[in-house]
Length: 241
Ligand SMILES: Nc1ncnc2c1ncn2[C@@H]1O[C@H](COP(=O)(O)OP(=O)(O)OP(=O)(O)O)[C@@H](O)[C@H]1O
Ligand SMILES: [Mg+2]
Image (cartoon, rainbow, N blue to C red; front, side):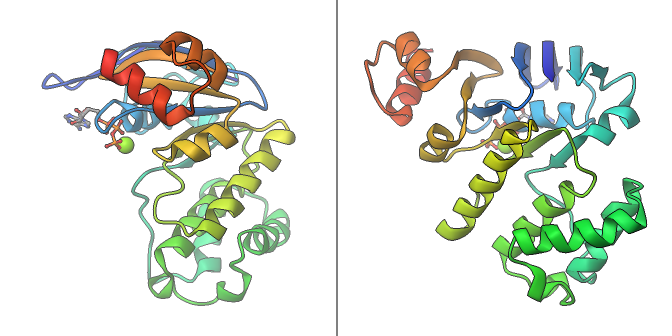
């Protein structure tokens, strides 16, 4: 479902992403981890069609994101790291605004919006303005809105930042449920305990280069760390790079 081929972003001052190659199968949850400044957000922005690659290609469900950005956006649910919210809108108005952008059928919208607000425990807040939401509520609203058009691929940059344990579990369970319905999930995170638990496979990126990828067991083999937890494997891989 996701194919990154020699994906490169050169900001001139920094080679942020350097010939990245990876594939994610339908229904798979792929975790993207790496130190600050490794190139995660840059990769994700290119996948979402926010910035253009310097070189290489991104295929989402076979669609080339650079050639057919509108077609790609139809099948991608995109959650950026610093989302922009119109805070004077209510939660429900925001959902409607996003639904209109994605041309969600109004009949489908009414059902789907309530379903998602329920799922993300936001239903009782739906008519409050977003300004009054806590950080975690805003984060949940953003993820809920990204699901309105029933995307086949979810691309999410650090969904768990600032969420309380209950909300982390809620988001984790929702992502797992999506994957079980064959939605493909690509997620960057610094929460390694969660990545370990949530992701089928994990890619470790450092200075724009993929150091290793696979299951935690495969990463342990690559790092020669035995049966260590992901945190230990990650620190070893990055230290030795
Ligand atoms: N618009 C830009 N212009 C110049 N350099 C940039 C730009 N955006 C990102 N960079 C640089 O590219 C590199 C990768 O940044 P990126 O934001 O992708 O890292 P990240 O892995 O998401 O880090 P973090 O964990 O801190 O979110 C960094 O060195 C950053 O300074
Ligand atoms: Mg980032």
